Image (cartoon, rainbow, N blue to C red; front, side, top):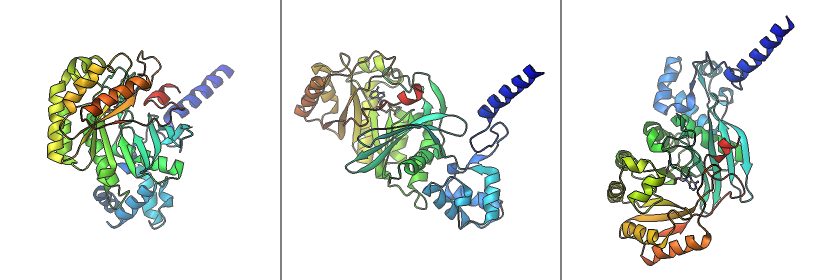
Length: 368
Ligand code: SAH
């Protein structure tokens, strides 16, 4: 009897933890949707179906952009509508399950969505204002061999509302305005293109967060067809491309994506992007000791970058537990930079923020 009771108790506690979210909604039977996923036009359909007037949609969209976590906070929305919304929808802000703060003001969060999916977001302070680095997927299937996010493959892609939710939750958490968004956290944004585009439209919407397109940067490992699509869909949004090598052979060694999209084709697509949009591309180059940090690499990279709207951002490698790569020392990074400069290539060395915390993308989730 007692044993049965004990087993029952343990089982019910376990299942409660797994299947019930923090607000007590049963995730197994919960068919509610994340209201953050909807545009003002879609919200109009939702509120009219619930028997209210179209203009309520703008009110609700405005409240969501303020970061409210419950429908009851939407003061000018009638209680009847708030209740019927809560029956069908939830406000999918992620919860910070782990938080690290650096002396320089950087805040790194392990966020968890109601279904238990965990991702990372980082808040950073720059001279030009505050910025957040958000994730577009939990895990990643691109397989770059120096990156922590890809070690367990792809868990799942995030929705547009889950990308927006990271910005709202981070603003709530820090109490600071966030005027720049970089999609450079976990995942490959162009492997989740529809949701990425939906997110950009949501956060740019004047009725909501109203973020300027020029204040958004998307980073890709180089999915060529999507670079072309992005140039035509969002010519005002900044693009960064993770290059990390001066040629095909070296790139294919660390980035499996190079086997699908060859180096020369990638550079050609990037040049086309700059011609179509009139905007420069930032190429990220993590300098790895003994792999891509030689003077020959710098000369070869210069020859590919010279004479068009390119910019190289040298990144000191974040060493990842379980990966053999080591970061190049400061002297070789400085020498690498000088070679690019002498060849007339625009180059910067990324300022390291949050170096006293688990700064490398994907590390916080693995160290839980
Ligand atoms: N998938 C996208 C965005 C996510 S990664 C992309 O590849 O661009 C964001 C940036 O961090 C990329 O440039 C990526 O190559 C780089 N990165 C990944 N692991 C790193 C590490 N250990 N040290 C330094 N940069 C790293």
